[in-house]
Length: 302
Image 1 (spheres, rainbow, N blue to C red):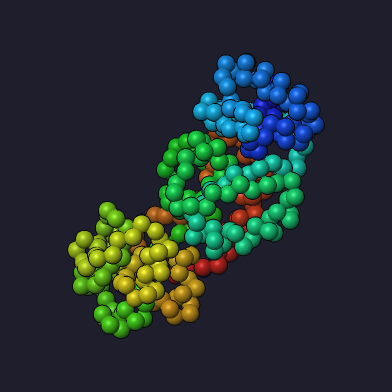
Image 2 (cartoon, rainbow, N blue to C red):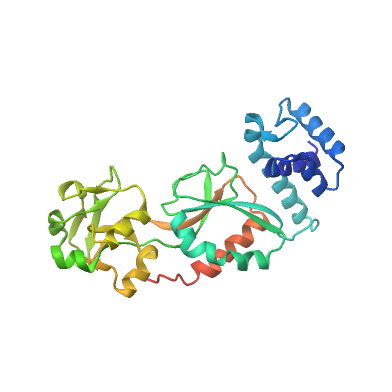
């Protein structure tokens, strides 16, 4: 397969403009159109839908796109192994991360990364929705859960410690629980259909954060909104330490049951498809996040 045609297809899919993709590769528009047509003929599928006004990715093109990126990554890795080729980090890096974490810790440091690597463009999807990396053609993702998918590889960025929090006003009005059993008398803010969360005391005693056994009148499907409601005095919620450490420092939130920790194994992982070659652009972005965030997390330890 002609890798120049594959490279042209990837650029055209990203820009949704065949002529612009061709110009970036030094091709005249007519030459670019012919090369894409030959690639489609070789594959037996229309990869791009063309009209007089716009270009769109076909269903077959969307399915082929992650494999096309993999072909180019493998070519780059092969050249690097032989000591040839451009080893500079270049290209568009597609990255997805939870929106709240990205707003607090990733977005503020992006200008520094772009200044360090002028050949890289970032295409970010910052949402709490968990995209499929392969189907979504993502190079890298930040996940705040255990790395269980066998099709993924990853590097741990930092611990994701969870704690119970409430506002001082809520605790003044409703009292401060001294034992997990006392949570049954409180308003607990939680996700819909959330399972009971185990709590483990420093002395080995156990308990649960279980909204079903308490006054769970507030169900929310967004972690940031839960924090905002907790700040407003709506009840007690479980939050990641990275999300609330500033509020704990300024006193607008108070840690509840500090002698107990949320006994679930979670961490912040930078993950990528196992089949993918770790290209230069992905490697430098991982190293950057590890240096700026993972080396000394701003939220510290509980």
